[in-house]
Amino acid sequence: MHRSSGICPFIRSELDEKEKENRRILQERHLTLEQLMGEVVELRRNTGTVSRQDSRSSPSEKSRMKKGLGGIFKN
Image 1 (spheres, one colour):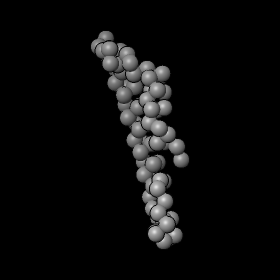
Image 2: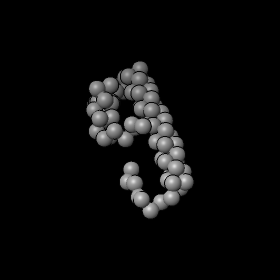
Image 3: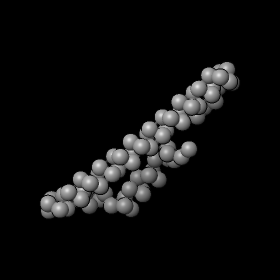
Image 4: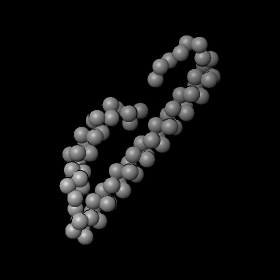
């Protein structure tokens, strides 16, 4: 995050707390989305409707996706 020297320490502290909370929420939502996508793939496999796109949603693909996010989920 860009640090501006013109912001008082109290406001900076409040902004840092909000940023930390926003990152936590974003990470939770990302994990929930990943879980739901996995459930969709599993349901499609169970019903025999696996598409090419689903087959690309393998664990290794998820790993590549995370690496491509540039560390957005690091605290």
